[in-house]
Image (tube, rainbow, N blue to C red; front, top):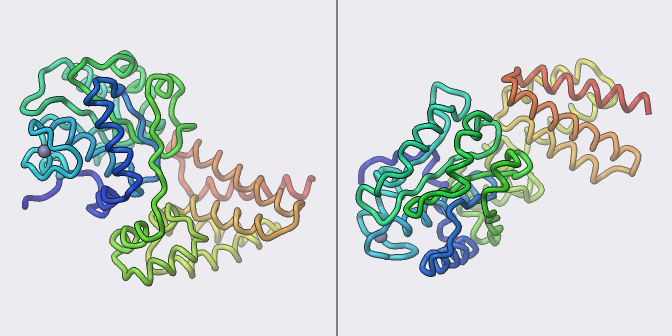
Amino acid sequence: MSTSQLPWPSATLEPAEWLGVQRYLARCLELSASGTLPGTLMIVGAPGLGREALALELGAALICRKEGGAGCACASCERVRRGVHPDLEIITVAPDKKEITIEQARRVVESVDQRPYEGMRRVYLLDSCQTPPLNSEAASALLKTLEEPPPQATFLLLASNPARVLPTIVSRAVQLRVPPPSREELVPVLAAAQGCSPERAVELLAAADGDAELVLRAGGEKLPETLAGLQELVSAALAGDTLAILRTASCLRQTPGGVALASAVLLRLASRSGPEEAEGYLDAVAALLAAENRRAVLHLDAESVVVGALTRAVRRQSAG
Ligand SMILES: [Zn+2]
């Protein structure tokens, strides 16, 4: 089997087996058979937890000439699953870029009226329709096409949070929220993504208070220790300890998914404290997320964002 051209790790495809994903896929294929599948779908869910798998399986089935349906093992469907089918276009941030550019959007608009090369349809899979990474000019360039794709084209837009998608895009897509997996389904997928044993995956999940997204974004063998250390630092930082603020920022810079981790720690602290203290933690989460949004748009340095957000939260706390 030749190599995958997908922009995601192979473990991303394992949720194709999840019952909820299969059920949604079956429903979409029913709609497609009756000619009522919307031309633009927004598939909402955390990265690695079913949205990519659902999009690819749906894409494969829509392109398949054998009408093999879900799980079809024909050569065409296998090529879609490896991201190498000419009728599947995956639009993602180029390795040397920070966003999905207007040039990429223009290429989509120019090619969308072409007949499929080999399959029944052309499928465009937008790896993220959130802004960022979808540049707002690129989004504008796509609007007309997303509003009414030609009959032979289907757009599958991925998002983790529709609140981060431009309203003009949201209003043109039908949303499909990937159903959460059962624990039995989730553990092997986490283990595959983290390269650890299922037993260890259960431990990591427990350390993250059951937050699978956090395990995927900021996982790794050291997750429990990182969370415990961070909790100590964040508590000291919010008590006004300047050194702890700086150390929190530097710790988050070195950890993938740092802001998600810090938010998880703050939410956990909030859930364990009285209403007044909890409010301080929740303020800090809000400040952190707002700062992270600005950071992503303005390409700021993550460390200064964390310092700014925590400092503001401390100031607000001592003022209140
Ligand atoms: Zn097939």
